[in-house]
Image (cartoon, rainbow, N blue to C red; front, side, top):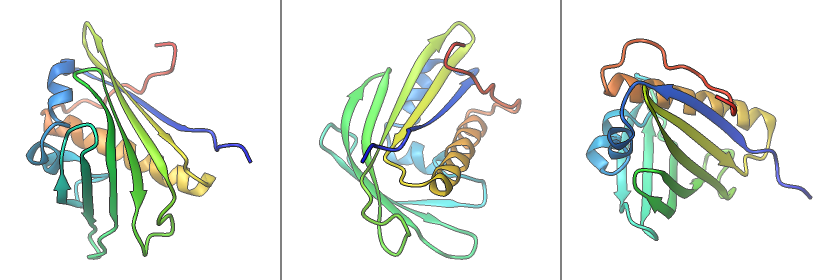
Length: 158
């Protein structure tokens, strides 16, 4: 069986790469923005931003559900990239499905290109849901930086 095609989400935002990377480095920074929409809160239950360090987050949904995701950081190269496993917990339909997320930050003269590559998503429906979540998280990141104009979705060649 072949691995599903990875989900790749790209966005250019007018914020320097170092500042974008810093938004991923601490629990306090992540809690301020790392959600798929403004009406979802993030409860950080564990956060060790080191290679081999673990994280565990609960997303507090408007209907009070609390989907939980966790993983281990396997790559941290400031300010260029971050890699981690990404595993949802029961009762999520994707519970225990091993996935991996790579965040890449490319410096541009007018900001940063962010590329999120999410591997191991097992279905088209789950891919659509995760794509909406990552797009929403990037919208939240922009709001965190006070950027009010929509970020520019970019292609692989941009």
